[in-house]
Image 1 (cartoon, helix red, strand yellow):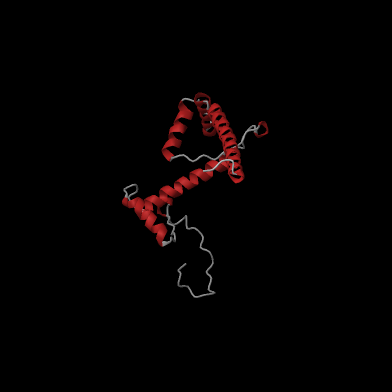
Image 2: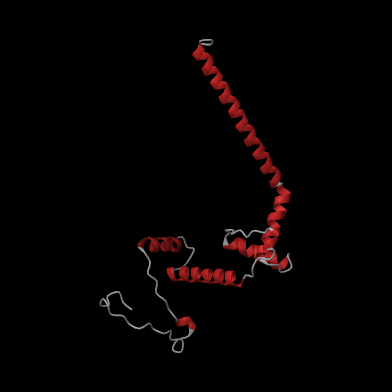
Length: 167
């Protein structure tokens, strides 16, 4: 239990004591590096959290929520139809906004499906395909122009070597 236990001395694992304490009284201890503690303290100092404990409880809740959502999420339908699942990083406030949108506007559809539809709609409205094709075409034209320029530079160097043209 303590770091100063004699070497080689192992205590049997302690069983949780759920019968003696209520769930609100259970505690866990974390070991953190100095750098991790400094980062925790910076969040507390910024006023985002009142204490290290509050920050760690919020982090634990978010981790458990994400893990439970990942486990509870059914397999992606239509994988055989060419669909690819892509991880997306969003702020917690953005996720809540999209969840509200999914429940209120999208008739309770799953968050992933709603985000996919929004991306598709945005892709159509922004004409992303056209923008990408235009950028690819410009890149090809730039490469051809560089090749022509390199060819002209070689010709100029060749003419200088022959003495036809001087600088």
